[in-house]
Every structure is written in structure tokens, then in C-alpha cells.
Amino acid sequence: MIALFTDYGWADPYVGQVKAVLAREAPAVPVIDLLHGAPDFNAHAGAQLLDALCRAFPEGSVFFCVVDPGVGGPRQAVVLDADGRWFVGPDNGLLSVVAARARQVRYWQITWRPENLSDTFHGRDLFAPIAAWIAAGRFPEDKLKPIAQLEVQFDPADLARIIYIDHYGNAWTGLRGGLMTGQTALEVKGQALRYFRTFGEAGKGEAFWHVNSSGLVEIAANRTSAAELLGLKIGDKVGLAGPAAEALH
Image 1: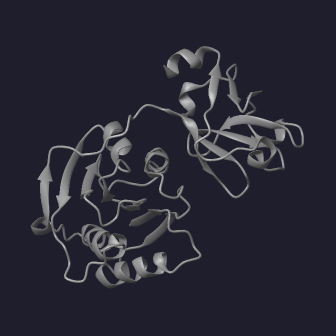
Image 2 (image 1 turned 90 degrees about the horizontal axis):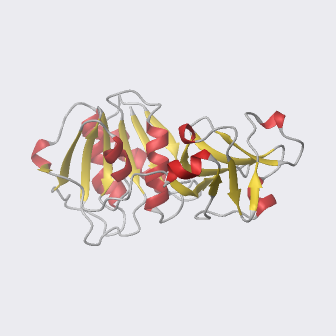
């Protein structure tokens, strides 16, 4: 299968244009819309999100990954095999957390350039065909060059910031839930939030933190938007109080 992870949104034609290429080049391969609301232009937040979300997919899955504000510039285009899952996208840090946390990883630079390559839509013209060929079992060896590592690498440690806000107003952080305990207080915007396992354990309108279904620490509120309640936005820092605070550093 091919999983799409982008900041394209749904209001514009970009997702449809990418899917048209995938359907042409790999018509028998299922395409999954994993996320098209990755934070705009924010490869660092995207890298943490991608690592959390990709783990639910089986080996052999191909991830088409685009959060690419430097499209058309000097950044390279790459493919990586991380523990049997394939990733195609820009070498701007977006794939680096997945790579750093993988047990085994191989890297290639995409050297091929199609004749009609848009300066600003490498997703459609460059990444989509490569992803489709890999997913269809036609590895494009003649269009790739093995490389030793990515050029841009973010710190793969947990990120104590808000990296995503869903439409309910739940704010995902870059902290993995295994770091935390129920005795840990999560601090954001000057407030210390308690842990609850589920929404229903909190009072109506009460903000709290929990470990979400993707394994990340999330700031939520029972039956209201935590983002609106607390004035949260992408990039806001969070802090820890208790045993997890030392583990984070």
C-alpha cells in the first residue's frame, strides 16, 4: 500500500493530482490518506508525527511524504528503507526521525528528473512516480544512487512542543507516552495539567493530558477544544514536572 503524508490539505487540487499519478503508475496498489493536515512548512513537527503514525503500517508499506517548503531549491530528494517500510520525500529533515529510530536503514538519493518536472510540485512529478514504482514491486534502481546518510537530520529525541492540533482541538506533543507516568504533571502556558486515562475521567470542560492512540502525549479537554481553552498553537513548548522531567533531559 501507499500512505500519503502531506501538508497539502483538502481544499486544493494537489492530493487529487498526486493520486492520478499513483493510479497511472500503480493501479493495483491501495492508497491510504494518512494525513494531509501536517503543520504547513514545518518539517520538524512533521518528522515527529510521521514516526508516530507510520508504526501502525505493515512492512512493505510505502510512504509518500511531503512537507517541503524548499521545493525546487538545493535540497535533495531521497528514498529510505527503514525496518522494511519505504519512505519517499525531501531531504529536509522530514524523514530523519524515522531513520534515526529505525533498527536498520538504507538510503538512496533520487537522481532521476522527469522531462516535465514542475519547479514547485515535486510531489506529483518526482516523488509520486518513485513511490508508485516501489509499491508496485518495480524498484527504480536506475533512477537512484545509494548514499550513506541524510543531509538534514533533526534530533530524534522526544520533542517537548505541540506538533499537531486535530479538529477536535486536541493538541499532540512530540513526547512519546512511554516517558510519562500518571504522577507526571504536564505544564503548558503556565498551567499544570493532570493525567487522566480517558476523556470521561475528566470533568466537563476540564483540560488534562493523556497518551493518545498514536502513542503520543496529548493535551485534551472533555467535550471542548483544549486548543481554544488554553490558547494553544503549533510549536508551543510543554514542560514536565516529576520523574519524567529528568528523563527528558
